Image (cartoon, rainbow, N blue to C red; front, side, top):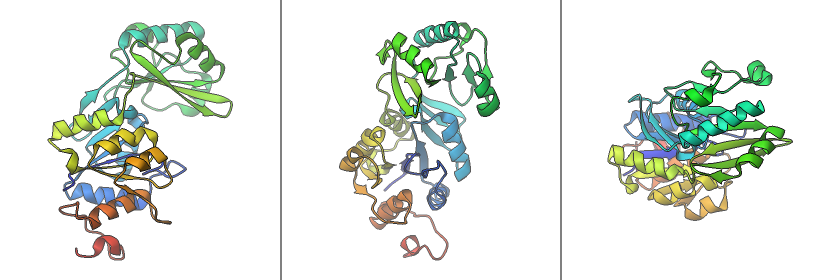
Length: 285
């Protein structure tokens, strides 16, 4: 029986506008209330995942930064970390100071989000309460960062020319947004499955007690590791190839359909009770 549902965000629980799909959120909350552990598993930062968790109305484990970080909001503690090497992060921050480039550092949900400096655009449009700019951050960074973030055009070109795509204790992922790019700097070969396995060790769950739901190539190993898995029908072929089930229904949210499939196969010992009208779940309750 499933005791843990690990759910991806972008393209899975979130729609094209990065908004939480309401029916799926309601089902996950009801599962959580019935005693099933619900873990959000995302390549995004801890604070994005925390916002989604709060919107759903649950607490518990979150896998963030593509598996480099596992923390539990119910226990208020970190459970797993695989950060960028601290010595390397400090070298990058010192270089960024010399170049006048802004770098963002995520250390975990118990820390602020540290910057070596703020650009005027960030200060005007993107500044959040947890953002803190620290002069000389390269010398006072209190912990190894789970992820570092750089956004721009010429800034990205300079950074990649200086540091390359990988090096001692780090690896880059580059995403393109028109004329601008973003660079995510993580520990080498981080993957959601590492944090998921760590969570299962902590909670004494077995792979056959886990349902993983996702859509992307960064979900493949997680979907393959869990005995029960569902891939989004509009997602990557690689994810679909390893999943137990691929969502197909038009007009049905992917997570809703995945949970419906699991319920129909008797994988939940005590499925959530839903309002009248949701017949796929209510039958037999």
